[in-house]
Length: 158
Ligand code: MG
Image (cartoon, rainbow, N blue to C red):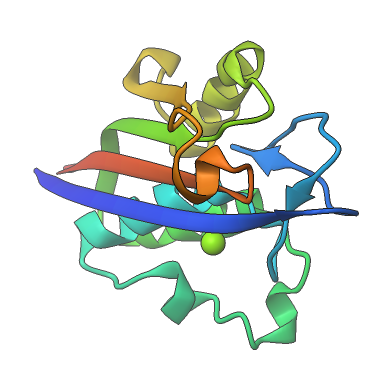
C-alpha cells in the first residue's frame, strides 16, 4: 500500500465559477486559476500522484501551457487515473478536508463525493469529504481563498 498527501490553495475572485470536486457551487465569487481552479480536485490529484511517486500536478499540467487553460479538473483527474492504471495502482480510499469560511458547503458535499468516487472508481463509502471553517482566522477565514487537503491510500492490483 502507498499513502499520499495533497494540499492546494486558490484565491477567491469575482467573475469566476466556484467549482469544488467537479460540482458547481452557487456563490458570488469563484476560484482564480489557469484551469477551472477546482482546489479540492487539485489537492486530490496531488495526493494520488504523491502516493504513486509521480510528482505533482504543477509538473504534469504546467500553468504556462495553454493546453490546460480553462480545462476541467475532472478531465485532469481522469488523466491521473489513467497513469495509475498503467502502473496497476488503484485507489483504496480518499479523505479530504476543504477549508472555507463562505459559502456553506455541507449540502454540496454528497454531490462532490459522488462525482469524485466515480472518477476514482470506488464506492462512495471510500471517499470522504469534510468542510470546515478556520473560525475567521487567516486567509480562508477572511474569505480571500479556499484551501483543501487530501490523503489517499493506493494499493497495487493484480
Ligand atoms: Mg491548484
